[in-house]
Image 1 (cartoon, rainbow, N blue to C red):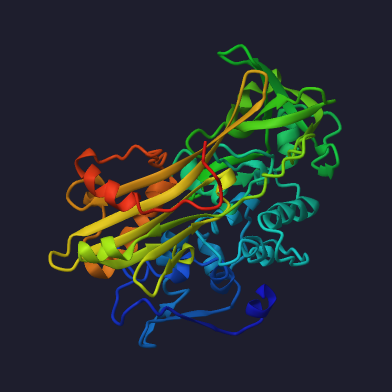
Image 2 (cartoon, rainbow, N blue to C red; image 1 turned 45 degrees about the vertical axis):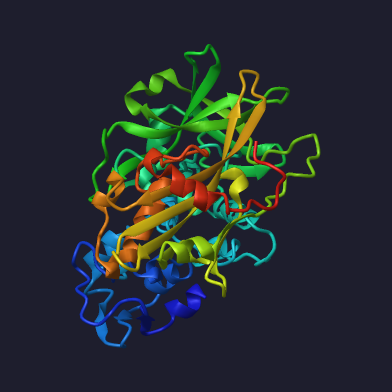
Amino acid sequence: MYTWYNKSEVCYAYLDDVPKGVDPATPISAFGGSKWFTRGWTLQELIAPKQVVFLAQDWSDIGTRKKLVDVLRNITGIDRNVLLGLPAQLSVAQRMSWAAHRVTTREEDVAYSLMGLFGINMPTIYGEGKQAFIRLQYEIMQRSTDHSVFTWESDGVEGFLAPNPACFQPSHRDTAYCDIRGIPYDEFARAFVIEDPLPEHVVTNHGIRIRLPVRTYETEKGDIEYVAALACQKWDRWGDPCPRQNMLCALRLRLVEDTINQYRRVGLSDVDIREAEQFTSKDMYLEHDRNPATFDIHQDETPVTFLISSGELTQRELVVSELMPRRMWEVHSSGGLCLTIDGYYNSRRCGVALFREERTGQRWAIVLGTQHVQSYSRDWTSLSSSFLVMDLLVENSDDLWANLPSEPDFDNDAARMIWEHYQGLDGSEGNSTHGIFLQPSTGRHLAQFFQRSILLGRDSLT
């Protein structure tokens, strides 16, 4: 698909949710809020062609990619040179971040839609689920020595490779405009005095074999951890190191018990290159996939379904204004709503339904979802818990509304911003009520709504 678009002379992008006459350059516009910018497959449609022309819902011309380059850069975070069709040196993490806020109907397409961006050709196996994105990263490692493939962040996720592109979103980092870029490996090797430098990382059955500079330290709890420096650095999107130019990205690791030289990823950190003499180069194996000795028949991810009764909506004269993400919602013929959360076992997944009262126009937002939290005891035993995420936000009764557009034409933006807030995609930690609702004053309304929500697929969430 990427090659097909790349060989085209011009690609026309029809935005059916953008009305005629919209100014794309305004801070909050229907153009920037178009669903076209949230779909996984449209990323290559934006980048690959020689020329892209954007069309509004009445087929009127909005502008070309070249003309709108700065607007598109602000919407998508894509490097300006890429949007202009010019060569650019880009890390794996940078390209992954472009897909961080995009969704696909099928889980596997998250990976398949990115193959062209990395020059990868691999079989498409629908049914493999999230393993497709893991497989994509394996393929990237076979073709690249870029350490930024390891610089993802996500709470409660096991394994050494990222489960999805959202883990590479810049909002996890020091600023909302921070990229991860590689530095020349020979420069990295000289700074850390790496003997016989080998810029390779190889996937083996014992883990990812790699040679990195390592330093040992003791945590506040007395545990022994390791910091391994990586040949990449944080930069702002204007081409300057941020926020401290001497800092490199690093991995926090722990030795896996009862293994030989195998280490488990704990998180991401920074190291000062001026302290390079404190590090010693070491060949190690990074545990890339948890392979428990005990077979767990319940390890598959079972979808969780919430149902919102049409009776409550009709009684309160609430009309559905927007659903986010749209692919997770289904509107029944009776007027009720169904939200299906899949893949929640290793992550936080939420859905937002935005309503307006017919008489007053007042907005209501229902947030439903699940969150799986992975933690470890002092002996490194895996502990896990799953929680419900449920909240009701009534306009003018919650501070969150003050930062949202109020016009009906921008309800899509409002729903997206609420969803990003609860997912933590806006740089916040995200809100999770865990069944304890944030708005005590609306507790009566919440009880009426949520007593009708039906949780399917598991006997309980504990």
